[in-house]
Image 1 (cartoon, rainbow, N blue to C red):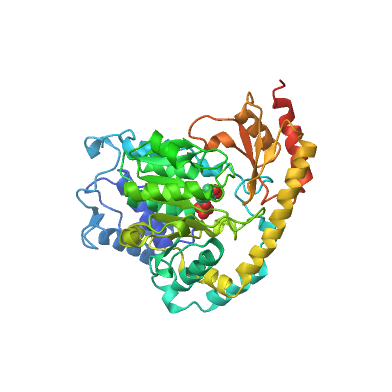
Image 2 (cartoon, rainbow, N blue to C red):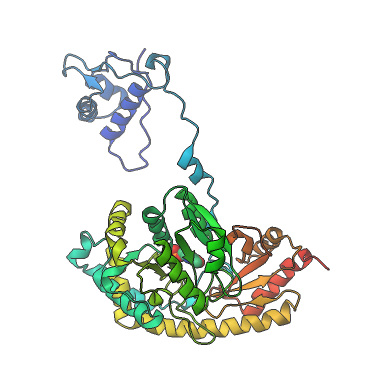
Length: 485
Ligand SMILES: Cc1ncc(COP(=O)(O)O)c(C=O)c1O
């Protein structure tokens, strides 16, 4: 039976001989041209298809070069032996069906899409800065300069700890603003604090290990621990944040604690000095480690800012995480991890097996943005903006939502909490807010153990709305769902 060939459409600008080669290869693989079958002569196929003979010869050469065909030109080209058609009876026993997912793959598949709950384009979305207020002109100038003529060392590899000028700028920034004690050699530039948490889990967590987490806590942390096969040991926070004494009672064997001492996520509580010192003492006694996630302390609005816990730790048992996601923008994917000296070799090795380092040019741009003073100026502007917005939100919440729906905001950061009545259906209320175009997130999403219901209201990104409009819309969305006493 003559071979009927359909040439694939030229939708990718592929040359004719390439399309003919693909069509013939397909015919061999699906069995229309079986083992030993003779291919038409190049002359007759060219005539049949209305193409130049050289086109057919080029396609035949490619098939022969890849072992699909054999035979010399002139004496006929045949489909080579062992070119078994795929998926037909001639291919012998079918390959076993893919096994159902188990173990780690199943755990990953079951991981809820935690970070996708927030929608950065919606007003009141937590964790998102005011994207419209970003100094695009300065950032563009820095990027343009670097991309026009990138330094050759940045076009090649990069130190797994990160671009040295950026590490120096970060060390200077956190030393000055957060009293972090470190030298630039301890700074590892990471792809956001989420990657820092992932590296921590890879290096420090054993499968099955119990890890102390605040409850509620950042959902991205729970995901990392679950993926590492660890057990998150929930320590309920109070108005003083994480309580080390309670944690030790709940789980005496733990040796890793993940905390947000300066602005507990999401409740906003600040951990006082006594608890900080007790936690450092705990780590020293256990030979354990403290993960300090200082995710939004660039923005402090009320009272004097509390310095980092890491700066108090003379035992060098604290890993300090920071991020540019709030101070610049989340899509930048840049943050840092201050690694204790004893852990540096392990973290550098883990980094090499992960992604080596964030893009060198992005790091260089961030370094220039900092050293040329744009970052500092941007932070000062944003502190004023967010401070004003926080006050407006607290005032307008009382007026619009009323005393039965109290809103509280920690002294720092970019979000507040709306406390819902005990009997509220938090998920339904959050959904109603979303149905009205708002991005606020349910508090329960970040809880390990069920607790009082609430909504997290981000005031960093109002997406062009006024505080009044956002709260007014929120109130009309959720009012029908608020239980009456
Ligand atoms: C407490 C906390 N930690 C870590 C992160 C992750 O931030 P990044 O964008 O730097 O990965 C977030 C993000 O909102 C957060 O709220």
